[in-house]
Length: 65
Image 1 (cartoon, rainbow, N blue to C red):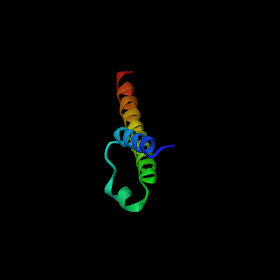
Image 2 (image 1 turned 90 degrees about the horizontal axis):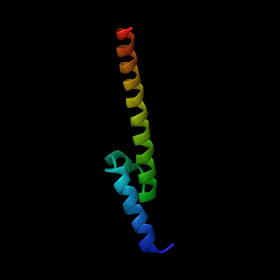
Image 3 (image 1 turned 180 degrees about the horizontal axis):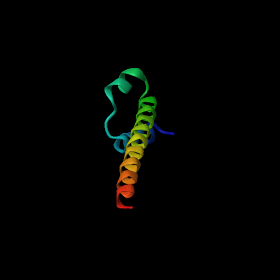
């Protein structure tokens, strides 16, 4: 793979990720590792939010019954 192609793919991955947490940036030396670590962190955050939403919606549904 050419360097330009790799850079384009990394740029696109960064667009999808958004910003990289400073702790992650400090913890990983390669950009690829930082992107993957941030993606994993984003998934974990999304899962926590989803569980909280499910809890809130479940409580709301219980109030309607």
